Image 1: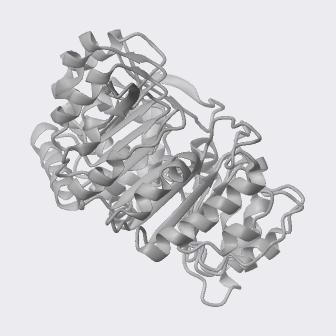
Image 2 (image 1 turned 180 degrees about the horizontal axis):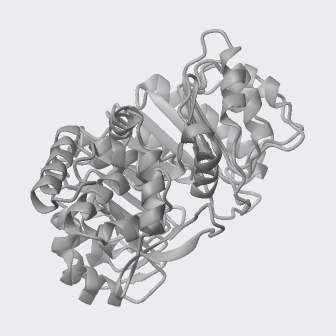
Length: 502
């Protein structure tokens, strides 16, 4: 369990008042997962319970003091802390809820929920069971396994009071199991089904999703039935003709080329849907349906994750593909089908030139695997969010930063601090950077130096940098008085903010 001397050291380092501000910011950035008023009430109840249940000297500490203490702990240590008593479990759980909700690895096993953690002592992405945080977990995934672990969740469903999202990946979902997940589906707001084998009856389960706000289905069979009309086989998608009263977002990426006439009926029945995500191929095949649609979306997301096409297909050649999509997108924007565009490119071979994208109407977010050195750095004048999965070798990053004049959010994979410096120095509107690194070394960041660089930029917004836990903790323990919140640069745990990157 937790070391008492270790805790005493942390108490001495927690006399600042920045916790309240950080907690408020965390609440405002937690997306679909939280309601601020409810979360404040939960915090207040936790504090009341501390006084009522534990007449120990440390419990009159302000809740913000505990926030400061927890900033020095790995997830494993925080979990140990939460196991000391029920009152501390609530306080640790609230911190966990706002600082680890964006972890994409909360897996269901036969005996509970597991995730990974890193620490300043050398642990890197090690597995841990987090049973003490059951009531604070907001998203779960069941991946490439039998259905047995879901029976565990079903039998403990009351423990997961904060659960909002469930994902199924690479498994078979068949009729006998549907009854098991009905109560689970009724509880959540976000459902993701990726690369799963389904039968047509699965879509009947959507009627149990009373709170469904986001529904994502990738590389699955979306056909419910097939009918023969005059000797011609017709595919049926009745689930797309239903109304989903709370639905805000639909992601539909079939695993094969399909024309889906029911999409028109879907948007007619669900005019409250604000965003639609699909593959470039699906968008192209259904272009006539969408151009005739009366839908007026806030956001269109295009993911260039296509199956291999024959070279003779009009959409199969990379040059033709990108040009065709850009032309179609501009037509859809002019038609009023969407207002803002998010573009995801998984394979850099799909983008022979970035010039076409620069002129696409409504483009606010660009996600690309890597920038190539032969790209011409044209002005990305309207891009507010840029994601580069695998870095940008031999690229003039200073020039790229200058071209993204409205950039507010940046995600950099396989990064070094040198990759971030040009944007810290040049991008005045930039306010969030998530820097993912596969480096196991627990190096600390000289945050005061970054802050000094930022101060030289006229009109610079405050920048929050989200980093992996091992780097955050190494910096926290080596920073002067543990201060990682300076005037223009602040460091936070990477799992406290969610970037959609694929």
